[in-house]
Length: 331
Image (cartoon, rainbow, N blue to C red; front, side):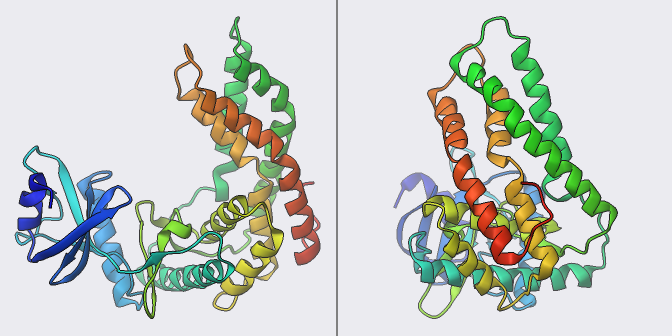
């Protein structure tokens, strides 16, 4: 056991009987069950909100969740001998969802729907109406893409990345503008997209398969928002990991709908999110936040991949439109 962590372990009402390594964390086997010890991300106020949210979700019946564990003195954050802050959460013995297993991915989709059902009910019980940004924040992202194009144009000496960015810009910016316009029309019609608590970063790393249940972890980005954003992001991640196999998207949506039927507006929501050039915006944002005196080869690789993968994206949109009857959209 790492000696420098003894102060952290001793602060909790548990006896450590073994340990191992997880993703950026230490996994402990204790007399109180499995525990995860990880560095504090964000601030203590956000951690308090996380604890309160997970306790409410637990009480609402979504019980297999990595709840925050308080120390003996009631504090949620403890420190090692060097002053580094750590958080302890309940954890689970099992295996991660396999991105190559259709069965695993379907079960994880079903689990996401159960999470959303509990999250929507919890949000409604709170009765707190919140003003939310338009789904996807297309307007803000599109303005950012335009701003970055203007910045690059003014540079007298351009590197390889910047030349390729300028070449690809018109195509992706036109997509962004069209998506923004359609979303603004949808907002005007007050289409009833589902609102409730969202995971925020749901993927195959977020689900652990235990002997007779699934556990959900990694809620660092939980929030109240449009729940189908979780489903869209999950589908996108799965498709990227599986050579853009559209049949996987159909299976995932079918499993999700066993709990929550999407209806026409749900299919249109996912289609619209997929239409937006999200990856182009991300590489634009990454570029803007990087040093301009030296351009990382990774940025160039990512931009080349965005351009290369565009044909696969168009195939997905065509298949989606035909399969779900979504014909009024962008491309």
